[in-house]
Image 1: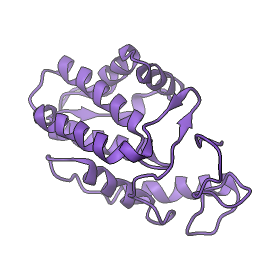
Image 2 (image 1 turned 135 degrees about the vertical axis):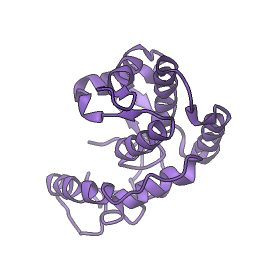
Image 3 (image 1 turned 180 degrees about the vertical axis):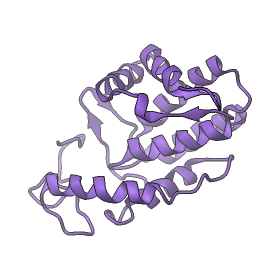
Image 4 (image 1 turned 90 degrees about the horizontal axis):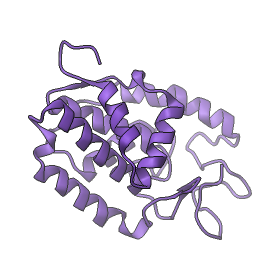
Length: 200
């Protein structure tokens, strides 16, 4: 799918192709997807919990760990504008500034530690939406964000089970959140976040 915004060649793609340039030299989209599905879970399993004081560099480190086998730009902020359906993501020149401001706001909220569960899920939905609209990487944003938020939730004293999410509902909730309606995204976080010893 062409998710680049504007005219001109996409430097991340092979010429005359919709396939991302990759370390394995794969030129077929389906084959590249298969490689991602095999390699990224293996890398995800090696990612340690990380510090409570997380920020944009930590998110970049997660992305680099996940995609290091596939993309030379793993962990690097994108250098072009992209969109998905009706959602245009943050202009690439503002990603670092806006990302650091968002992470500073998260720090100012003490990384959501010691919040009642109802408040926590509301703030998770807010920050997930903001980070999703930032969309700092050319590809792989969702996978990196899920690990980032999983660690955030654990440090906040709760658990999260992403397997409780329905893909179609998740996509719809994020689309609505990008236009200001956090209702469905908050409901999903309410479903997947639980206290230790409690089923999500």
